[in-house]
Length: 395
Ligand code: PLP
Image (cartoon, rainbow, N blue to C red; front, side, top):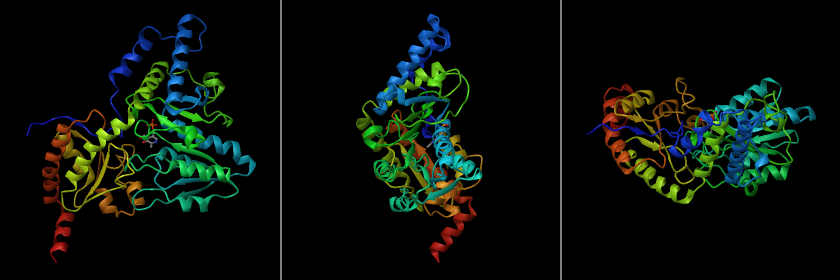
């Protein structure tokens, strides 16, 4: 078996595409002006910013003046939730609703607000990783300031019923934020048809660079500033704009929403090959709904195997993957997302996330499927946990 390099961790981050890189390069070397400067180079930078804003807006079917650039998806999440709470808290609305399996950018923001006196209800998800709408309906109160539910989960890829959630929030007069960092380019998103009030996105999940994101704020909803400073972003977010990255984000958004159905079809076929191939191994289970999931996401629990050890062995074979989300690796706690599905700590520990992209090929999938049984069998041979499982089975 020839060793290959297979990048299967696109949910953690993606490669900057050539088209994005080429669009960005002149903004480092020629058009490096500050977008607030009045001379021509500054005006060029400003024009590039506004063009990018138009592209992001078009990709989401909203107005350019509803898009605010941020330094990342985490900042957009923080701004959305803290902004609504800062605005409505003093009016007596001190309750937030979110789900148990949000990204930490949302969960830790909610925890910070709890320390400031806000109350948070964490809605459970079903065993397939879909938010329970009835629980959401029952949780909304007179003093609910905001609901924040992610569009698609970063670990198990499940896509949430965003339109239904937006309808519930609208009916009850509650501001709805969705973290769409993982959904962009995988699902058609029209913020007006969906009826969301706030939506976060991030460049590095869609082949733009790390360190750039955006927040959609519905016209008519005025949030307090998150970063105080200069007059950038129509006085809403101080800080000299990262022009090159914003240019990259605009191009990446344009590319991401092109031909979504065709891309989803192609990537889904490859992903299903991966899922079906790995599920051939005994004592494995797919985490998250099979249909309502991102086309590139394969998250499988493999009993009798330690996730970290599996990742290291896969790395030795040139395969980049993840167990739990990249943001929590380094921590030995089992993933809060997998626990939310009802998995035991042991099973959650032995989970693997492979996230493929439109650059993944059939040969890459063949290679992963060739490596996986060898690696899993080797780890199981060494695992006391596996011995226990086999003994219990033969009893
Ligand atoms: N939200 C989700 C669902 C994510 O997957 C991520 C990144 O992994 C973020 C937010 C944070 O985005 P960023 O890395 O741009 O801060």
